[in-house]
Amino acid sequence: MKKKRPVGMIMTILTIIFFYLPIVFMVVFSFNSSKSLTSFTGFSMRWYAQMFASHDMMDSLYVTIVIAVLATLISTIIGTLTAIGLNYSRKLVKAYVTQINDLPMMNPDIVTAIGLMLLFITFHIERGFMTLLLAHIAFCIPYVMLSVTPKIRQLDPNLADAAMDLGATPFQTLTKVIVPEIMPGVVSGALIAFTMSFDDFIISYFATGKGVKNLSIMVYTMAKRVNPSINAISTLLVLLITVILLLVNIVPVIRQKIARKREADPDYVPKATNHSARNITIGSIIAAMALLLVFFRPDGGSQAFAGQTLHLYLPGEYISDEMLAGFEEQTGAQVIVDNFDSNEQMYIKVANGEAFDVLIPSDYMIQRLIQEDLLTKLDPARVDEALVQLDDKVLNLAYDPGNQYSVPYFWGTVGIVYDKEKVPLEDLEREGWAVFQDPKYKGDIFMYDSERDQFMTALKNLGYSMNTDNEQELQAAYDWLAQVGTTMEPEIVTDEIIDHMANARKALGLIYSGDATYVIQENDQMGYFLPNEGTNLWTDAMCIPKSAPNPELAYAFINYAAGYEAQMLNSSYVGYTATNKEAEEELANTEFAGIDSYIPRTGYANDEVFEYNAKARKIIADLWSRIKVVISNAN
Image 1 (cartoon, rainbow, N blue to C red):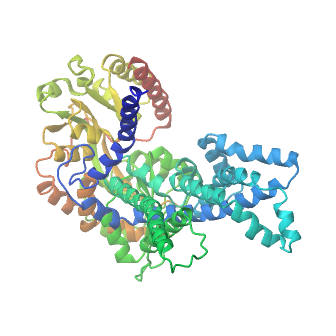
Image 2: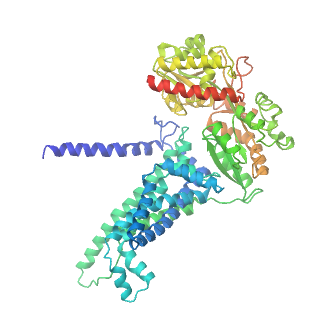
Image 3: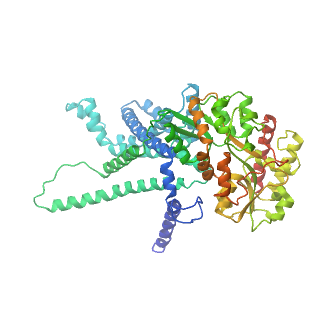
């Protein structure tokens, strides 16, 4: 037995390290001076400052706490009363209700989430705060009942009758006899409910809408791009939990010591008390939550649009918090930001009539929205001030001639990010996109999980237009990409390529120009190359959907976002090229000086703008899913 103790101790230590090392890592990098999540470059509080400046992040924390507290209180009351009622019900009723209660806990979260979403849609219930709260109450109740039921079964079955025989009313019997006896189970159920609600992502993601999101949804959105503010807000939560645990463990010890001293005093007269560690736990949590609710509660404004709300729908991590704060301060309005993972996801919501004031989709999707009459035609008198400030190269493009429906927001290219120490420039100039097929770089390349952009590389290298819908040409592009997948051992990534290439983890990869700008800023060993075969010259622009509930405020936002100050804040924060001519030129000569990826290549005959083509999109989507299977099997 003695020989086994060191082994058990080592395993315990390793387990503790496994669980707590990631938390320590997160806390350390919350103070990193750069955006890198893997390379510590110096101490800084910038991410905490950015976190507190982010209205969107603070609103999500506020929603998380409010939902968790309300869901805990309501589900604890309902679950406790239901468990007590079942105890006095017939066996058949008790058995059926218990099985129904267990079902949500056994069901995968995704099934419950989709079921709730379909329920709200079927009954035309607009998703938002109330649907999110109802969903949390629904999945918290079973956990409360599961905790309370064993305590009820331990009660003397004659306890309630005895209390009422002694003159207690049914309500007094419930509140003064039964509930105090089962209080440990009630407290356990409440704590589990609070934890489940605070932590939930999947059900929340499907049950909410109108820009209402909790912290888990916010973190999911932010994690798609490098944002160390995730570390900062997570560190604060760890600190909060640590303080609560300290109170739970230290305060009872202190109280016991005080009690012993008093008992040792011959003049001490004991007093009845029913405090306990659980009371302290609940009190600590409620106090901490109350402080956060007060501290982070959003304030209203007093300017022209005071009390109004702008619903903004754009890709994740695509806007500066300082820029949003400036707009809110200038107008007095509140901005609710909703993020989409892809243009296609955005289209589905807009086509189904979900209300947003401003959209920021890509060029080809704007073209589709125009064709399907889903966008408001802009009043030239209201956007002329914004358009005259923009670079001529982003105006009057084929997807929206005359910019009748959109005002450009960011623009750029798609190219190759490469490690200058591993990839000679001569290889890139000689091979172009075919460098992804060069055996020299086997196992050392990233492919980007974007069907449009990956097919663009193959089509361009084969000499075809990236807008082709010719099935033979698309099949040839599939064969080209399949060869890469079967012979080159590529790794398919999305935005994580930013941190990977900033830390030189592979030789080369497909990347958007704005992401390449950040990578080169972090590591001057990286370069950006645009093949001679041509590439995608893209533009993302601001539009007002026909379903916009507040078009006046939408015009105000578009004009503000196109201005010099807003574009300086946005472009320097995100890294993508400003469309405001003055901001673009200033940043190119200052913050992004010498970084080729910042200023897009223009006037090049082989470069193209994506056009919306339903036939091609369907074929490419199917072929890309097959390529991912090929790569998965090959690796």
